Image 1: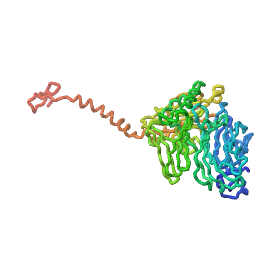
Image 2: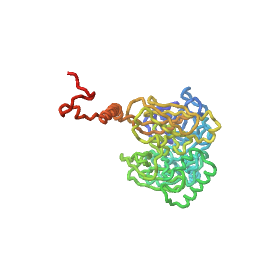
Image 3: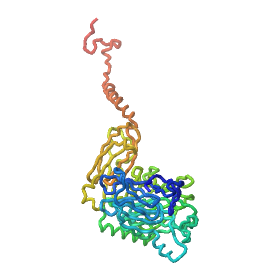
Image 4: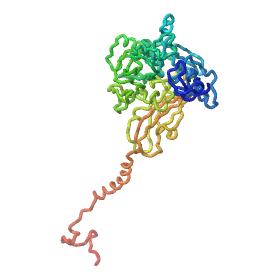
Length: 512
C-alpha cells in the first residue's frame, strides 16, 4: 500500500489500535503515530520517517516525493509508536529506532541497514516452546531516550504489557489475560539490557481491550545535578569508571541519605494504572505512589509554580491534575519535559533527555529571570553544546543555526545567526512588536534538522509610561530646583512702604 494517511481502517492482525473502516479491504497501511522530519545523512534532503500498521517503516524524501534508498523496512508487527532518531554510535549520522506492537525492537542506520535487533520476549518464547500457554505482548509505550546510568551512554526506555494465553488463542485478544508490565532499559548502542532491567510490575486486571501505555518520563530527581554540566562537555574513561563505581556502591546500600538516591543518571517515572512508579535508573531503587485514579498519559516535569524547583504534573482519567512539588530538586531547562510526548513545544523530533542529548542549547539563568526590561535591546546569554565523539573531525557538521522567536511562529523570528563552534554567547536583540509580555524561544537546528529549544518569559517595556513620565517631568523638575534655591530675598531699604528711600536696586530714584 502507498497510503500514508491517518488511521481509518479495521484492526490489523497483530495490532492493538482500533480503527473503523473497510477501506482497501482492511489492508490499508495506516500511519498510527506522529511522523518525524529529519535529515538522516545530514545532507540537503529532508526525510519524513513514518511507521504503518502493516509493519512498514518509510523514509520519504520530501523534495523528490519518493522513498530513500534502502527503505521501507519491514517489521513483523504493526508499528504504532513514534520512530525515534539520535546519533548514539558517534559517527555524526543518525540512527533510527523502531518498536512494533509485538515487541520487536530494531536499530537502523541512515540507509535502512540493521545495526542490531532483538525481541523483548525472546527468553519467554524459548521457555514457552514446550508449553500450551504462552506469553505475548499486548502493546508497548512510546520510547524515551536518555542517559539512565549517568555514564554518557544513551539508553532506550519503554514499558510493555505482557499477557498470557493459550497457543491456539494468540489471534484472539479477548482471550488474553493480563499478566504483568515490564519496564525495559536497553543500551542504544548494543541492544543489551541495562543492569537490573527489565523490571516487572503486577498487572492486576484482566485484559479485555487494548489500552495505550503512557510514555516513560526520564528526569533527574537527585538533589545534586552539578555533574551534568560536565557531561555535556564529554567524559574521560576515568570519569566513567568513577561513576560506575558510585552506582555499584549505591545499589549495594539500597538506602539513600540524599534526595533521589546516591547513584548517578536519570530517574524513570512510569505511571501504570493508578500507581506512579519512580525508579532510580542506575540502582533500580523504586518508590510507588498511588494517586487513586487511572493515569492515562505521560507525566510532565517543569517549574509550574515558579518557585525555582522541579514539579511533576500528573493527570488522571477523571480529569484531575496533580502536582508533586520538590523543595530540593532545582529547576534546569535541560531537565524538563513539558510538551506531551516531546521534551519542548517546538522540537517534536528531539526525543533524548536534555542532559544526555548529544547536542543542545539552553539559556543561562542570568538571562532567563522573569523581569520587565525597560529599553531597546534585550541581552540573552545561551550556551551551545555538542558532545558527539567524532565531531572534531568533521568541521562541515559543526554548523549550528540559532534563531530566537517571540512566540512559536516562524513569522515572529527576531534573531537568526549561524555559529561554527560551541560555547557561551551573549546576543542583544530587539523586539519589533511593541511592549508586552513575551515567551522567547531560543532554537537550535542542527545539520540533521533536529531542533532543540529553550523557552523563557520576560516583559518588554510593559511599564513604558513610567519611563515616559520621567522623560517629560524630569527636565522640568531639574529646571525648577535652581529657581527655588536661588530666589532673591527683598530688602526693606528698597521698599517705600517701610520707610525706604525708594532708590531701587540701582541706587537712584526712578524717573517721574
